[in-house]
Length: 374
Image 1: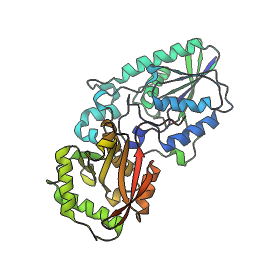
Image 2: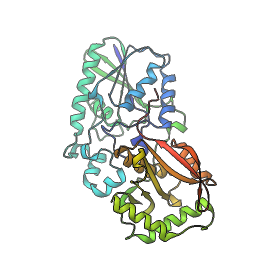
Image 3: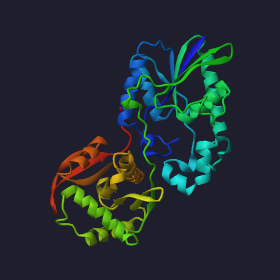
Image 4: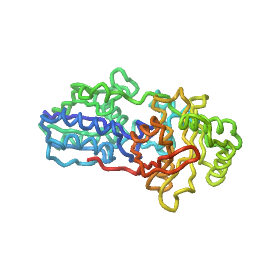
């Protein structure tokens, strides 16, 4: 009898940013690293003969949990990749709900109807992943295997294993990051022992990103001058405690220049139809030195501490990554401890101190691109 452990990958950037990350090969998150370590301890004393993985980084990284205590190679197989979402790759859920409502509804709730030009269907994913599973188990009779893959891919594969409808979330649960399924295979037949077991995770590491899914609209700040001024004024007050040195028209004028240089530089963020914040990027600044610049990042108070801050920041990170920049920079008031802690949490480091119009500013920087944690 062959034993198979099928594991969903650790928390990755797309999970955190609330965006589609089918074939997009992004990084894992700090929480994902901790989940990997917990998974390693779970499998420390489990006998393993072979490890297979999707060839995408988040799945290969997850496989490194097994190799921590088992000296085995990780065999990549692209058939275990996540669903290819074509034109939706790196699109935010909040935007898709508004801009492609019918297709997005089918993607989440009516999978058999989901047909998006340039993307895979659920049946196509099931065909390739189940075929790969069957081939792998036939190569390893009476051994123990680990396969690290992705949420939709695992559900599609297990729907074939157990004869489940892919939309039946009661029989076929949505897998937690690092959720484990155990299967047995003998005489050409699979048996499911359990599904989506994440008991190795502490309660803190079990928390998913369930905050509001934000959407963005690119704006001409001149056309929404009142809201732009409001955001900058509130950000200034939060940083400095008063409006000394603040000049709304000066900052609005800079934002208009940013927009003229790049129509996607200034974004108004919404949760459904409620304003959630604003992002202003100066895409010209730092181009010569390979870094991107955030001029303003502001989140309305009711959306703070809900997972929305990283959704806002991720838009700047993705924008500058697409532009080929190697890092992202911004200024933070030295007395704004909450903001400094937020940026440190997401990988920013202090480069230096600079004078500002209302006190000292810290120059902070985050490196962009995927970083190996293996």
